[in-house]
Length: 400
Ligand code: MG
Image 1 (spheres, rainbow, N blue to C red):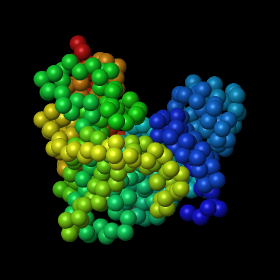
Image 2: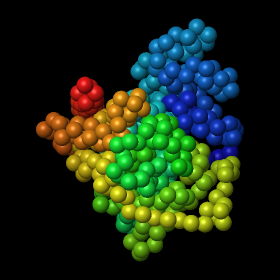
Image 3: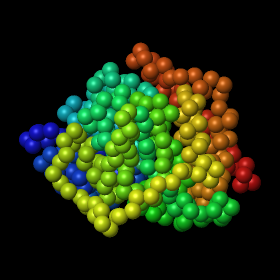
Image 4: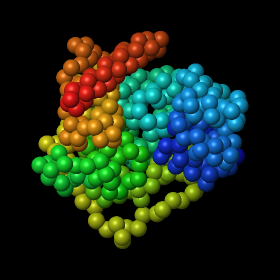
């Protein structure tokens, strides 16, 4: 990326944790990047200050109350609705779409960006989980680049630079193990919300923090990696690495292993994705190896962290199973955040949704020809809705 060519960004989910960190990367690289459009849900005050600082041309508010409030102040700058969201992803002149919306709401706009051949830097893992097969196939046709922001996948991307895909024998995703790594399974029933929200190494949004506590986050990352790096499931391993210093590793056919290390700061991965393949000369916290002088590794406990096992199984089953898993997990995590279910019930709800899948759920997505992608999307959304319904039903019955 040359110094003179400033890139224009759309940020989906500008007020979330990734969105805010992306804006900080833009702030520190203001001659390289400019923000042309943002989307947010309800955070009116924060959007106001983002407008004042970054001067976007368009702001899409997905929540109608938030839209009404801001439209009174800013007029046509503020838009709402799915068409508006799709438009800021495919607009001419936009170079990079940062997909940082939470949950499967990010799917259609992200596909729109890929269809338009943009660089998509992707933090929304649910999108890749439910439709990674479609997204990567579509990107091959349109020339869109999908560059991960997730720290593990960013690490793997960095390890793969200059390497041929054939020489990769294994990728090793590292997991911190979350707050309950050393907690005995017998006490899982008494886990409280505030305990689950206390992640040892990373400061993140609430949904992903719970996913890290159940290790579903790592399970989703397995599915994500499968599509991003076009690898079979057998070549994707998970190792617990409590220090979170190594962000992930790649093993090659000669036995050599490359790892990417860094301080746990998501701005690093965001900046790398925006500047890829260049490294931009703006430094964040550097890694003090003498202070971080231990690297420990453990096998993940699949008896304790059932969500990790469920995710791997769903990936193996293929077809709509990752979407079913993801949807049930979203509902279960929401319910846990509302304190209407226990921590242990999260995998139970997901398991139940998976075992109630429709008969043809494992049928592969069609992917090509391109015009059939909408059929696949319909299938995905149908399975997603059904799984959510099932999960809600399960929760309602268990509360009664
Ligand atoms: Mg991650």
